[in-house]
Length: 58
Image 1 (cartoon, rainbow, N blue to C red):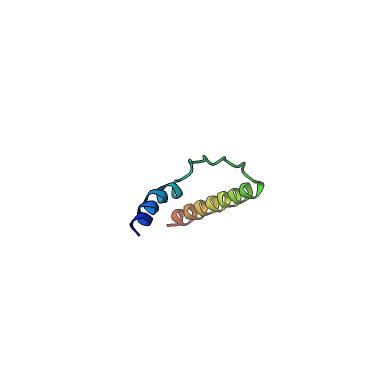
Image 2: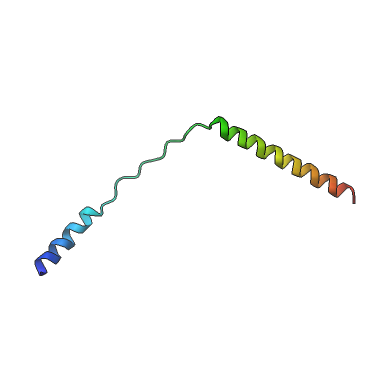
């Protein structure tokens, strides 16, 4: 039993060794992402115009 525990304790770190970190490769921006960015930008611009309109009415 003791020998089994010793073997298990010495072999476990070898099984749990982590692999080296692989840097992620940046992916190009897709047309769908560009469209989503355009829509978000236009919505932000519309919100800013609406706030300016509401504030100027006071």
